[in-house]
Every structure is written in C-alpha cells, then in structure tokens.
Length: 160
Image (tube, rainbow, N blue to C red; front, side):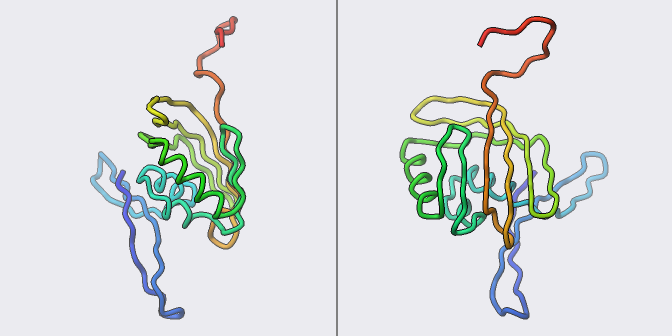
C-alpha cells in the first residue's frame, strides 16, 4: 500500500484542499484504485511519518485524545506538547497496521497492531481506536490496548 497526497483546487472557495488517498493494487488483476483514507488512517499515517503537523491536521482544535497508556490530551495545544515530548524521548512508530477499519457517519473504529520504540525500548501490542468526527476532523479519539499477548484459549489461562 502506498500513501499519497492529492491537491485539489476548490472553484467555490478558491483555495487548496488536501485529500488523503490510499492506492490499492490487486495482485491478481494489477488494477490500481484510489480509495479515500479515513481520518483514523490519516492520523496513523501522520504518526508513521513522524509528522506532528499531519497528526494535528486530522484533529479539531478542541479535540480530546485518550492514549491507551492513560493520558488524556485536551485540544491542539496539549497534543502539540505531547507529540514534542514523545518525539524528544526518541519515540518512533515502526509500524502501525490496521487490521479492521469501520466507518459509519461520524464514527470510525479500527483494530490495529502497534510496533514502536520509545526511550530506546522496542515494543508491540494490539489495540483499537474509536474516533468521533466533527466537520471533517477527529473531535474525540480513544485508544485501547491489550494487556497481554493474544492466544487461543484451550481450557487454561496463560500467566500474565
């Protein structure tokens, strides 16, 4: 999958608008299709690119972002502080793969696998995001994380 930005000029507003698309190519037919990216996909793409401005561009100025580790960030100002601190601590997203994505009206949900480094330690976990949208941006984003590696239960629980 390749991420690109396509610039469109709106004749009504006479200004540039950026739209995010995913190019999907079928292995069997070699046909490419432009598929608009959801806001969660755009948000994740910003993290993958280590791009604070791309992340902020997906959020409303009065957003609420709840990280799976517990902190809650209110508004662009606090999200900017969080991003700067995370990147300064050598935080880097190595991979953030969406396994399932749903979009219905003003709500988007995604299940994903997150692989990152922070403070020199590499880690991975599975999680999910719920996003509530307002006027084409994310107003509320909440992440959830698994507390242990997933496994098929066969009558006994694995130790934590």
